[in-house]
Image (tube, rainbow, N blue to C red; front, side, top):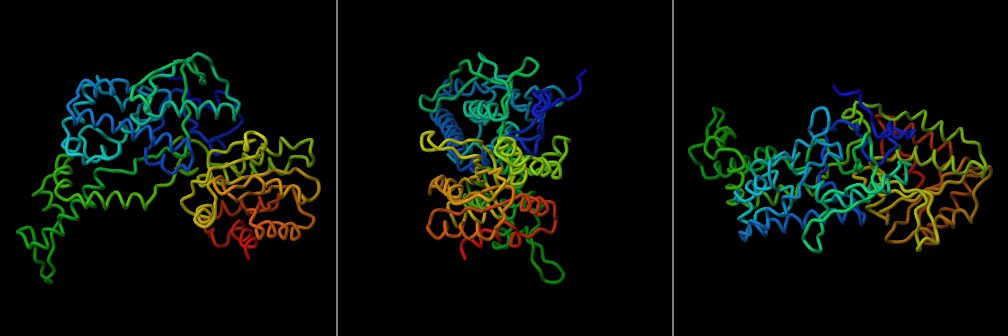
Amino acid sequence: MLSSSMRISEHFNLGRTQPTLDFVDVDIQGDLPVFIDPRALRLLPTPWGQQCVSLIQRFFRVVLAAISENRNDDAQTLLRSLREPNETHLGLSRGRARGRALGWESARDVWEALSKSQAVRSGLLEDLEDTILMVEGIAADIVSDIATNIIRGPLIEYTQAACNTYGIPLTAGVDSGPLWNADHNEWHSGYVNLPVAQGNKLLLVPKAIVRRRMDYDADEYYRNYLLEYLQEAELSASTQLVQLLKNGTRRVTKKAVEGKYGRGKGMIVRETLNHPDVLDQYRADKRRLIQPPLDHDELAEQENSQPPDWAALLRAVQEVPRGRDDADRFHAAVEQLLAALFYPSLVNPQSEFPIHHGRKRIDITFTNVATHGFFHWIAQHYPAAHIFVECKNYTGDPANPELDQLSSRFSPSRGKVGLLVTRNFDDKELFITRCRDTSNDDRGFVIPLDDDDLAILVAERQNPKFQFANSLLKQRFDRLIM
C-alpha cells in the first residue's frame, strides 16, 4: 500500500508551492496526468527550447529515413533506447510511477507500428506529433514519452539549473539514462548530478511545456477536417449521399460519409494522401491557434493542490523591512510574487542572470512566452523576448543611476523592456518622466512599480472582469511612449 503523497517541494522543504515554481511540482511516488507536448517547446524563444526542438526533429527524421530505406536493424537500434521515463512522474500510470505509456515489450514493436504505416512510407509525416494522427498504436502519452527520452539531455541541464535556483540538493554519479546525440545520430549515457528522492532520481520538467492533452488530436482531425472536407466534396459532386430536406436544403451527414469511407487511422492516411491540402490546413490552423501553458487553476486541478495565495505572496513583499540590509529578502519575495503573478505569460525566472560574460547581472530575468495580454502585446511591437526586473529595497526614491543600471542590461536580442520594483516613490511622476526620457533616447522601456502598484496588479489578477486595455502595466507603458 502506498504511503501518502509528497510533492518535490515538500520532500526538499522548499517553502514554496506550485505557483511560485517554474517546474511541475509532481508527487515523487505517482504520476501526474499531463504530457510533454513537442509543439509546446516551439513556444520557448530560448536556446534551450530550440535545442529540444532540433533534437526531436533530428531523431524522428533519422528513424523515418532508416525505415523508408529498409534499414530495419538501424531503426530498431535507434528505437531500442526509448525507455519508460519514470523520473519525470508524468503520464497515465496509477499509483507508483511506472511509465505505462511507452509500454511496448521491445523496440521491434515500436518499429512495426511505424514501418507498417503507409504515412511513414509515403513521406506524409513531418514531425513526431504527426504520428498521433496517422500511426496505429501511437497516442499522446506515447509521443510524450518518446519526446521525453529524446530531450533527456536538456531536461538534465534544466533540472540542474532549477536545483541551483531553488536550493534542491544534487546527488553525484547518477546514471543519466540514454542521451540522444544528434551530431552522431546515436545514443550514449553517463553519470550526472541529479536530485534523488526516496532512492529514485528525478527529472524536473518546466510547467510551460506540459499540457493536459496534445495539440494534435486524431479524432479532431478526422471529424472536423477530413469528414467536413469529404462532406463538401460529396455535396459538390451530387453523389448518392446527398439528402434533400423538405425545405429544399441539400445536405450530406457525417454519418453517411463515415459509412462510405470508414474511420480509423488507416482511413485518415488514405484520404489525407488523396487530399493533402486538408492536412496542410490542419497544420496551418494549429500554428495560428497556439495552446497556452496550463494556468494556475488547471495545474491545481490536476495536482489536487491549492491555487496561489495572493494575499500571502503580496504580504511577504510588503513586510520586508526597507533598506539595503534586507535587499536579498526583498529580491526573493518579489521573485516569488512576480513568478506567480505573470505566469503563464512569463516563465523560467532566473535570479542574478549574468550578461556581458559575467561582468553584469540582472536581478531577475523572465522568458516571455505570452499568447495574450500585456506581455503578448508588447512582444508584438517591441523587443521583448525576455523581461528584466531590478529590485530596489530603498527607503527613498531610486534615481538616474538605478534607471541607467536597468536600461544598460537591454539589447535588441535579449529584450528592451524591464520593471524597476521599489518600495515607494516620494515623487512617482518625476521618476516616470525619467523613464520616458530613457524611452525617448532609445535606451529601452523601464516600467516603475512600487508596493502600491504590486497590490493593484494582484487585484487585477484576481478580477474575473479584468480588461487588458485598462491594466496598470499597459497604462504605465503608454506613458513611456506618448
